Image (cartoon, rainbow, N blue to C red):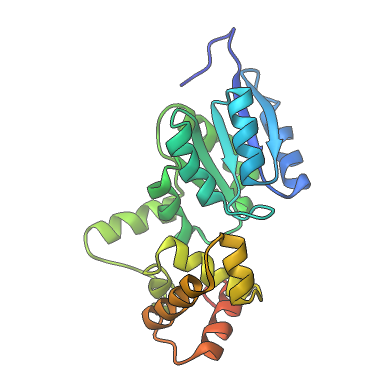
Length: 223
């Protein structure tokens, strides 16, 4: 969707770190046909700004102020499917990129890669294409023909459903079952069910091992 000379492409930045947004603004404003029309720190604020500015593209982090970027992507698919979404995140692309694409995102790039590759990713997404790193694209191709690479634990994590992975990460951040229930607006019994499913899928003995693995994942990736 290249912009015509008389029409700027409007971009909304959704990230709870002001310095990250500032750096993205610096990169985007160099382009004569692109403009940042709004910034948001959280899901609900983002939905309002994207709607009011009639944005063409939303650049979204996965971990927002009090919500999750993947839920925002899903919301936009329902409410404003014409808005394209590009994820720029610190999260492990080997785990999250495919999930984000399934949720409706048109691309995924890590923050470590963003300074060098974000403009290329933006252009690809605006052109109607999917942007993924070569590493992730190769992984998806290997999976499609029955071969997977990576540690056993990373592969086990990939078996978790989106909500199970969210619960797993909140556990790793030190949140109690009640706190997770409040954050995700679910009841405690539902979170307990998710915990049981996670332990089963990851072959964990008890709650202590679940906590240890979750902390390792949050702080050290597949640790």
